Length: 464
Image 1: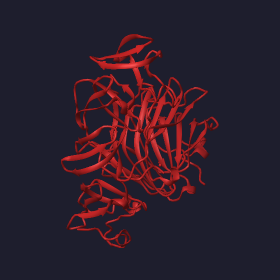
Image 2: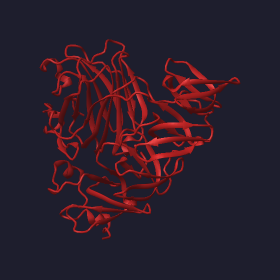
Image 3: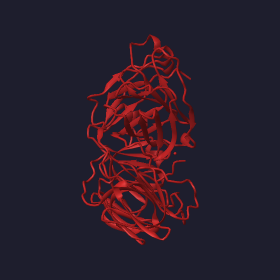
Image 4: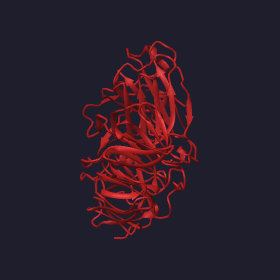
């Protein structure tokens, strides 16, 4: 069944294309379909992705349609897939691989020489790719403990009413198919036992102007009106990270102390986007809060006074403008290290390695084998246990374009990272696609949680 033109689809009473606000309110068929297609005009279609053939047509199943619908790919900007548990693998050293085209993925490093890298991936099995495609390698010998992953339901979350006439009528976050939705001002919070160093990941989708306040390291699960915080019930200090379409800023909040602003950062092109992967890092010892968007460090704030957070909770407060979808939340321990390049120089002529004790070595990477990194420096070959290596960076030559080409899709892994792929076939058996950097690969059906065809071109008193 070929889909009718998009402008006609919007007129259907049963809504093959469902406005985001309608979706958020839960006016769906009783049959649950967890996949979501986002169109270039901001409309949303729920259902089940069936196949993608030849990188052109998307075949979709909707509960209100007798037959499958064929959608034109050029009308779609993104498809979101439900979070799934990834396959467990053994052997080699877990690592993050950064490629010269700005892509990255996690896999176990088996070996590496001057020509090729051999890896074992939980998504694509064992494969090799040219060393010339590699920009940096970040070994991760220890897995970070996962403190929370979800949401799987509204159980365990505290819903709060935002008491502020300036943000319109108060509502509640609504849970549906692994996500929270808010169309009115609303608060949802949970104690996740936030450790001294933590990473908080989630996927954020919005329609229209939005303003989201994320309370970090809070001991209070109800929203706080910042304009009248002194009259609120007793609460311990926390940090309020406020994000909207154009900027982000951080405020330490204490009940009986004046508000302090640690600085605002602009979010270029964010106003033209409708989704992002958000990553917040917290380091109590260093009094640091950092914001990363789609894997890029946007801002690191350092508090010059004592760390304000007094609890282990997080709270999401939608300020009542626009519509917001929150999903893929994952809270883990963090080692305090940022996955960044050792140097910002675009003309690094030698390979480099940064050790966990802070030392750096430069020279020629001669390979990795049996858990050891070999590097030739000043004519001497040195071997270092990979467990002591924080990051390996290859000489900066022949950097590839990070932009999508016609027909390519940016495929995002649930645990972080993404690849630029030319899709040959997607069905229930998985995804077969070609990567310029890695070659032809077949991925398991559960590999990705987001496919994006379009690039990221990504008045009231706030409550927190």
